Image (cartoon, rainbow, N blue to C red; front, side, top):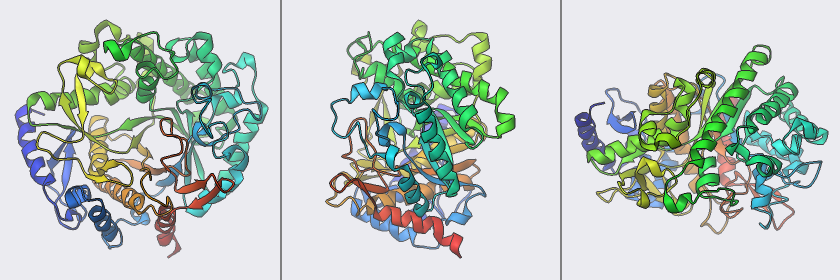
Length: 537
C-alpha cells in the first residue's frame, strides 16, 4: 500500500474511532488492509466498534455489549461453519501440579518458581482430571486446548534417560476421558516449559543439540497419542518465550546484558533454534504420521493489531516494522523460508541464517496458524534504541496505550485492568488472511483477568469481553477469513507466570480456601448457555 494512501486511510480511521454510539447495530464496517483500519465497500448488520462505547466508561461499554448479545443481531453458535471448534484452554505448567509425583522430572519453571505459593500443587489437575473433564463437558465445549509436559513423559528430556510410563498413562487417561465425553483434545507440544536437565546440560534452546531431543519427544507423542489427537501445535508463542528468557533473563541464564545494552543476540539464536525444532517435528509428522492419523500440525503465536501512534510516516513505518519483528519473525520463515528483509537490514549479523535445507523444511511446515489475542496497541517510532522498551529493541518502536491525539484503542476495563479492543482481533485476522493466503486459523487464547472485583464469580466484564470477541470472530469469517476455532482462556484459574493466581483467569474459579473447589463463574454459565442453547432447539 502506498504511504499517501495510508495517510488518507488513517484520517478516515480516526473519524470512525470517534463514533460513540453502538455502531454494532448500524451498517458501518471497518476493515483491515494490512495492519490499518480502512472502510470497506461492503456493509454488515454487525460492526465491531463496541470497544468505543462510552469512550473509556467500563460500565457503559459492558451494558451496551451485553444488550447487543441479547439481540437478534448477535451471531448464534449454529451460524459458525460446520465443524467449528468452541473450547477453552489451559497449559500443563499452569494447572497440573504434581510436580514431584508420578515420576515427573523438573522443568525450567520448577526452578524459576520454586518459592512461589501454590506452584508445586497448582489446582491439582494431575489428580482431579476426571472431575475437570466433567466441568468441561458441563460447559458445553467440543474441544479442549491443553499441553503435554515434556518432563512428565521424558523426565530428563532425553530418550536415553528413559520414558516415564506413569506420565504416558496420565495423558492417555486424560485424552481418553476427553474423547469419551465428546471433547476433542487440541494439544500443544511445548507450552513455554521444558526439562530443566536440558537447560542445565547445554543451555536449552540456545543450543542446536536440543532439536534432536525435541524431535524424539514429538515422535513419542505422535506414536503414543496421535491415533486420537488430531490437532497438534508444536510451540506456543515462541516470540514471547525468547523475550522472557533471553531479554527479561528470567532464570538468570542469559550471558548477555541485553536489557542494559539493548543490543541482543541470544534472542535471535533461541528463536532460530525453536523454529528449526518446530520444522523438524512437523516434517516428521507430515512424512510419517499424518497420512495415517489424518491430523494437522501448526504453531501458536501471540497477536495484536499495531496501529500507528500518529499519521506521521515514521509512525506508520514503525507499526509495520514492529509487526514484522514480532509475527513476521515467526511466520515469514514458515511461509517463505526466511526472516523479513527489514530484520536482516536492522539486525545484521546477529540474525542467524538458515541453510538451504532448513529453508525448504520450514516452508509449508504448518497446516494452521494459532493466535492468542488479548488487546492491541498504538506504535510510536523511537529512533534511540536505548529508549526502546518491550524486548524488540531493533524494531525501533514502542507500544503506547494513548495516541498522539489522546485517544485509546477500545475502552478501559477497570475490572480486568486492560483496554478491550475486539476490532483488533478482527483486523489481525484479516491481516493474516491477506498476508498468508487464506490460511486456516484458530483463536487459541482469548480472555481477560478478574483482578478488581470483590467476588470473582461476578465476572460480567468477562462475559462482555468474550461475547465481543466472538462477534469479531464471526465478522472475520463472514468477510472470508478461514477461522476454524475459538478457545476462551482459561478453562480454570491458571498460574500466571507474572501474577500467580491473583488474576482469576478461569471460567471456573478455583477456591483455594475450600479444597480447590471448582465453581462456575457467571461467564461460564453464559458460555454454556451460548454453546448449548441453539443445539437444544
